[in-house]
Every structure is written in C-alpha cells, then in structure tokens.
Length: 315
Length: 291
Image 1: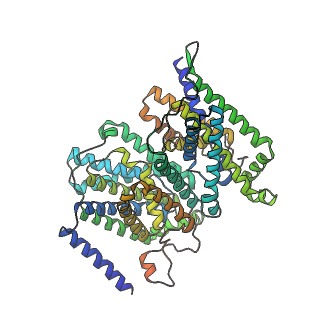
Image 2: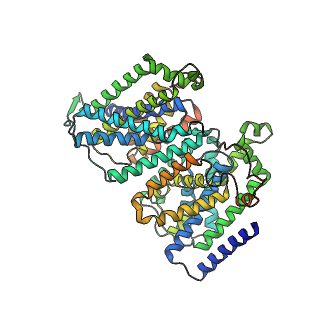
Image 3: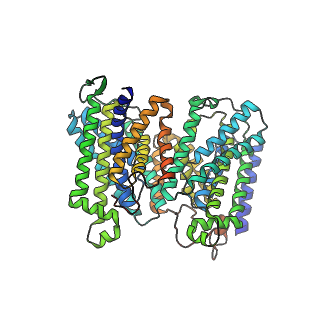
C-alpha cells in the first residue's frame, strides 16, 4: 500500500517534469507552478520556526524581502552568477534573522509575534526609504532566471534539508523547546541558541525563496512584502498543520492554485480565504495534517509524527 | 512655537490612538488575547458614523452614538462566534482566528462598502482658532474633548461601578472570579462592547478630522494602537491612554523633523525598544491590577 502510494507520487512528479520539459504546459500554468514551489519553501521555512521550534513569528515576509532585494541588486548591479546570487540572498536573510532573533527570541508567545511583526514592517519601511532599492517604485528589469526546474530543485533541497534537520539530534532539541522550554533547559539544551538557530535558518530559506521570487517576477517593490504576505504564508502553514512538512507542501500548493481557479469569483476570493482560516481554527485547529508526515500516515498504527505528543498544545 | 504646534497636532492624533488602544488593553487584560480585529471594528464604527451622517442626516452626537452602538454589537458578535468557542484552545489558535476575523472584516468591507475611499460629510464647518500664534481647529478640539470625556467615563465605569469591579476581578483572576459567582461570559461580552464602542468613537473622530475613510483604514492605526497599549503596559487602562498620546506625539514629531515616509517605522521602533527594555510597559507593574 505504502509502496504503491510512493510510486504513484514519484510517477506523478516524473510525469509532471517530463511534461514541463516537453513544453506541454503553457506559460501561465508554469508561472503558477513556480510560485507554488516558492510558496512551499516559504511555508516549510516558517514551519521550522513556528511549527517545529514553537516560536510564533509573523514577520516572515521581511526576510523574504531581504533575500529578494539582496539577490535582485546583486544580479542587476554586480552581475553575479545566479547560483551565487541565490546563496547571497539566503545568507543575507539568515544573517538578518540572527541579528533580529538574538534580542527578540527572549520574548514569548504574543509578544514575540508582535515583535516579529514589527521587525518585518521595519525592514519594509527601510527598503522604502533607502535610494538604492528604488524606494516605493521598486526594482524593475531583474533577469528572469527562475524557471520551474530551478524553483522545484531548490524546493526539494529545502524540504530534504529541513526534514533531515528536524530528525537529527539538533532537531530533537528544537522539538524539545517547542514542547516545554523549561524541561528542555533542565535537560541541558541551550534553548536560546536553538531558538536563534531555528529562526536564522528559517529566515535564510525565506531569503532564498525571496531571491527566486525576484528572479521569477522580474520586478519587486516593497508592497510585495507587506504584512499581508506574512499572513499569507502563515495561513498556508496553519492550514497544512504546524509541525508537518507534508502539510506545508499540500497547503502551499493548494492555496497557490485555489485562488487562480477562484478568479472568476475574484470579488469573493479574499472573503472565502479569511472565512476558511476562521472555520479551520474553529473546527480543526491542528491543521490538515496535524504534526504528522506522509510517512507516518503510511505506517498507519503505532507511530506518531515528529515530536509526537498526545495534546495539541501549540504554544 | 512650531514645536508646540506639533505637540497639539500630536495630542489629537494621540487621543485617537489612545481610544483604540483602550479596547486592546481591556480585551487583553480579560482574555489575554491580542484582538487583531480591533482595528477593523474601528473601521466599522467609522462607516456606521458615515452612514448615520450621510444617509440619515444625523448630527455629530447622535451619529457618534449610533457608531458606538453598531461597533459594540460587532465586537460582541465577533467574540460570540469566533473567540468564545476557542476559550479553552491554545492561545496561538485564538491569535490566528483573530487574524482571520480581521481579514474577513477588511474583505467584507471591500466587497460591501466598495474599496474607494469616501469623504466624510462635514459635520460642522471647519473653524480655526488662533491662540497667540498657535492654530487649533475646532475639529482638533472636538477630538480632544470627546477623547477626554470618554476616558473619564471609562475610568469611572471601571473603578466605581459593580460591573467595573467585576471586570477588574476577572482580569485579576478569572477562575477565582468565577468561583465568587461573577458571570465571566457576561463580563467578557461587556468588555468587548465597551472596547469596540471606544474604537468606533475614534473612527468617527478620524473621519471628521481627516475627512476620509476606507475599508482598510483600520490596519495601521490598529497596529499602532496596539503598540500604544504595549507601550503603556498592556492590561493597564491609564497606560493605554498615556501610550496613545506618546505614540501620537512621537509620530507627528518624526514627520515634522524627518519625513512622512518614516512615520510607520516609529511605532515599530518604539515597540521593539519597549519590549526589549521594559516589556511590562511604562505603567505596567508585574502582578499588578489589570483590566
């Protein structure tokens, strides 16, 4: 059963890639698929912070912006090769995550949420006010270097990296911090260090996604990285389930495609979107997948998800 | 003199923030929830006031009353439908729900009220008063006066009425209050109603002062008022008033001294500074009395 499902999944992905390589998808669909891959990276990276380490951040778009602007400027003004630009975008955002994480991660719960919101907005306002970024007019003419394969490749690398990280001994420390910070500290885990590491890595991948985003849309401006973008990523994460990478993938892909199909009802789109969030929280607050992964679901009985716990405590 | 002028402008903006911040702080004091939808209740209040004046030709005070009642009903409805079922849920789940309610109100606003900004009808003609070089408009005076009266009324309500006493008790210890026979659900309803009504007053005043309302008008003032509440010490009513005034003055000063594009950063800079230096806020005392 499990084998069949995995084979079906691999087969589907292979077919999809062959289809893309043969040019069977139109430009529009390819664009949406690329955005879906970028959204998966964003959601999975936020999952590392919010889902696996339990630190509630709602300023993810700020790190995406740092990555996007760093990458775009390096491409436009310094003409660096694309792979290096991607790494630089990720590194810049990761460094920003480190700088911001060190002071703010002393805060907990609501306060941390608000502080990350504040930093996200400050990043946007700073970009708006320094001349080199083009201010409110944004940066046009970024080379179109992100195609579906690049985005998909980076997405797979991100997912494998985060999955392995969470399942490593360091990952156990993240989960321990999420489940009970005091108990984790008693067990000799340097909770501050692990929180900052998770935050910084999450920010780095958000920067990577931002770099891809900039080279996909070929134009960025501060309005693309507003508080609403952070919320969009958060909705994807929550819908999929805090602490489930499978959930992140399903929800990010689903919520990228769904609005495209709802275009004919575009007036009602955002109303449905927000109503969905509320209904989700009222009826299934743990999200579609809870903390379970595809692999857990395939093994059916006996095994829990990562950091399996009976209660669905989120903070 | 110029600085004094800016101070007056800052205080009138600050009264608006203070009125919104009161709702945040009261709700947080009772249910420990950042009510993200509060800024949008302020928007609902502004529109209710708009229709009261524009369609029903009410004058200022009746319109203010209508706006406050509509917003109070909205706030209570939100609490009933979205927050009450999650009373026992993890706080993050409630926070996300609050974000959802906020988005829902904004998008319903865009859908029903149309995204275009509307200009608020003139409730009273603009008049300028010159106090030895200081220019004060009658609208600014209305904001300051209404803000002051509402804050005094609120202080009276919280400190000298039975319901106010019950509110303080619930804020201090919800379970103990329950054991003492206080109807906690009713107190929470009252808190949402009062907080939302104050936000609606702010919305109407903003409409009169800036002459312009739109469905997304609540986002930024909402966030800033929240910062004001944190600055004053979240859960502390006089703190929200002080925080609001400080925020208003700081913002006007930054616009006057630097540039208006930096004005939104002020709030967040203040927020992060206060969270790092004194997270309990200016007037917050750890373990102190909170409403």
